[in-house]
Amino acid sequence: MASESFDVTTGCDLQEVDNAVNQAVREITGRFDFKNVLVEVEFDRAKNTIALHTTDEYKLDAIWDVLLGRLVARKVPTKNLKRGDVEQAGGNTVRQNIELVQAIDSETAKRMAKFLRDLKLKKVQAQIQGDAVRVSGPSRDDLQQAMHRLREEDWGVELTFGNYR
Image (cartoon, rainbow, N blue to C red):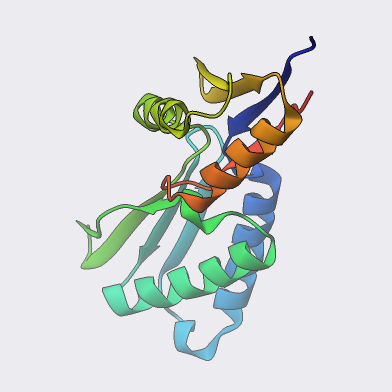
C-alpha cells in the first residue's frame, strides 16, 4: 500500500517583499506630508528584516500603513511579519525592525505534530524535518482532512502545503 505525504512550511517570497519595499519607498517619497522628512526603509535579505527609520511614531505608523498595503497587494503573507518595538534613535528619531518569518519554529512544529496526533486520523503521522512538518498517511482523504484542520487553527504564521505525493 503506497503512502501519501505532504509538507507544511511557511515563508515569504523575498523578491515580492523587495518589490513591495521599493514601491512603498517610491510612494512615500512622493507624498506631500513626507517632504523634507527623514524616511528610511531598508530591506535586508540576508537577515530577513525590514528596518524603518523616521522622525516620530506618527510618521512611522504612516510608513507602516503604506508598506503593509504594498505587501498585501503583492500577496506577501502578513501573518509572517513580526513588528518589533519602537526604539528611540539618535537625533530625536525613531526606528523599528520588522522580522520576516521564513520557517516554522520548533515549538510551533511540536504543537502541530501533537495537534495531528490528537485528531486521531487513521494512521496519519507527523514528522518534524528541520523547518517543515511532513505529514504522511495511507489515505489521501485523511491527509486532506488533516490539511483542512491545520488551516482552521491559528499557528501565528501563514501555512503553505507543498510536496504533495
